[in-house]
Image (cartoon, rainbow, N blue to C red; front, side):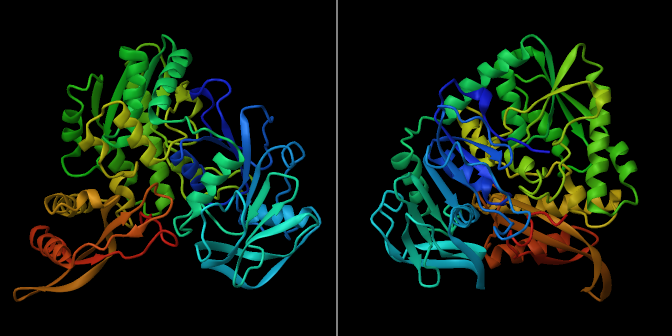
Length: 521
């Protein structure tokens, strides 16, 4: 089933738009994010669901793909209304597809071309304006272009890849065999800027303020006088979604905060206090016993997520029936949730499920409104700032919807939850006390399903191991581990072992995403 991630309701007619055709690359969403950084509106559509090409579209980008152009079942989009008619940029697979299907030759590389490379040749052309020779680019492909069709000219090369970039004479069609959207491509943003501004002629008029204004108007039109129930978590996403909805429909928004028993230490009380004075109508529901009872004895990660999602929905169904005439469920779903949860015939392979994505059971009889569905985390924060939301709240680290359930590896017990809450509190508070919290995008602790031998005084212990995790990122799709000071790690480790009964060993996770994920489950 195809899917579409875009902002169609949030903008007026004739909004300048870049169309991104998704061939399944995990980097596709990064292309969109970079364009939004440049204040240009964009839409992502699956390659096999090309929309009607209207005057709104100023250019098209073909994404990378896990497929090879040589595969029997490789994506084969219809570009008849695009190529030669609109500015077009092929990225990696997109570049190889056009070369392969319009008279050139693509063949498997002798060695997989993956990782950093440097441009050894850059021609004088619009796409590479202000991109110097030697610029670092990021390669990620197993095939390579060995022969270009007629009227195709090489505009960039590396030492190992002759056709790192090409242009079709007589067309505003460009292609590159590397990924400008990733940070490893040092001048990648310049290349994208050149394409959308110089080649496509965009003016860059999309801003957070524009998004807020347009979204509120769209929400008013969509919801009218109907009632909306929304689940608050205390995090950035649900808060910004709630404030947007509140600005649009006022008292018709009913917020519910559910305690699933898997929150951080004192989180339930702190969240309820946090929203006092914000003008939001919030009801707290303590359902911790129901969640922990259903999770008892369950170890498989996806099973835990599904149980939490089901109990969450059941709790919401009960609470929503206490409110008269509820028609809508508001959710703080953001783009990474969607892109990691939906597979559309290849595009964007499923990594894990999210309980706030994918619809609701029929018995709830509620329509879904997701005002942040097309935004990345950093965009959500910018939108929050545009609405004047407190900076301390906007600066909070992301916290997974399933909570500590996916940070307790193995089965869940009240004792394990207690241990992890105590350890997590020491770690997070330590980051704040040492001025490190804002240097970290997300931090947390994993309770491992192993015991470790230790010695405390004259006593031999056999207790739990915990893993500290701290990463830096911009959107959660890629992440690097943070080089926290050794002195800080030593103090935190000592505090945890001395203060939390049941833990005798602390380790620090130094893996990046990819290949690892931020969470362990």
